[in-house]
Length: 142
Image 1 (cartoon, rainbow, N blue to C red):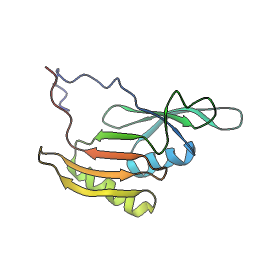
Image 2 (image 1 turned 90 degrees about the horizontal axis):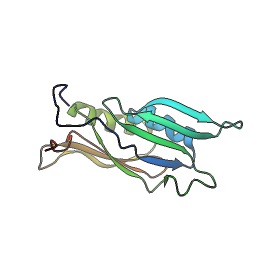
Image 3 (image 1 turned 90 degrees about the vertical axis):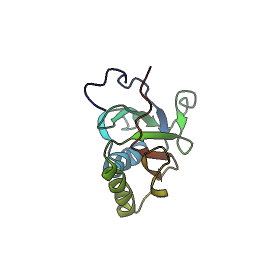
Image 4 (image 1 turned 120 degrees about the vertical axis):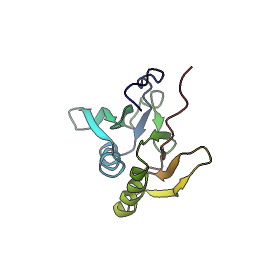
């Protein structure tokens, strides 16, 4: 996004999910896919109650450990899907390479170009969540 763009608002929607293994999924999301851990609040037993992972160019994800009483607050792991904007097309290919190197998760669709000008890759993380990474930032707001 161009810093002079006044039509595209800053991100204020935060997808949420509850992971079966929050620490393991957080390690994958940060080490393989490129998110950055901002904060992780744990209980006395070390269970992640709430964590925030930032996407480097804006927005992020809130998550925690799947546990009794969290079903109504977040999408269950394995049923989550998200589109993540990646401004640099080369980073799409780099994400695919890191997924291959990690030997965890899977590439659902290898990097490809869309008919609307985006360069994308589709990935499933080790818990079964679907991640679409692409260069399409959305249409400018009216």
